[in-house]
Length: 140
Image (cartoon, rainbow, N blue to C red; front, side, top):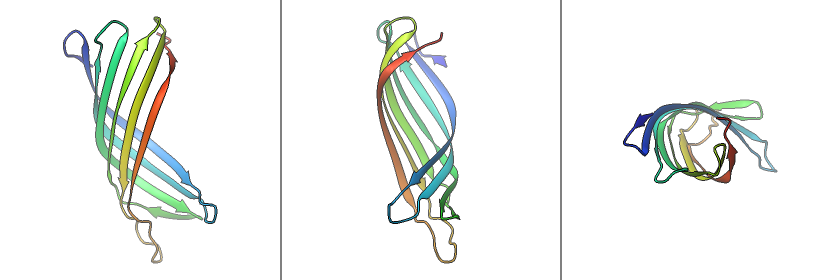
């Protein structure tokens, strides 16, 4: 990271990921989805007082090789855009124990699949939101 003064740190990074999930409707076969992603991002951390760290980040990129598989038929989607944004508040109770809360939003778009015997999977937007609170233990 790059120090921007005494209390602020800027960290650029690259995020490589793989995502998979199932969608199950009781009257239809289970759908299996997967995609890879690559995003570039930056994280800013600010410590206004001792032991407290406020973090914000943002990423922008694309997904690639997205697929949907239903009953042994695989549909290849087109590549689409992706972004992630989030924030975290962490307070160190001791040198190794921290309490935290965070909010993360991740979004990506899958573009209409190729046609297989006249059938295709439509385009779709996917957004995941996560809210977390917890205690973490730092090994040092």
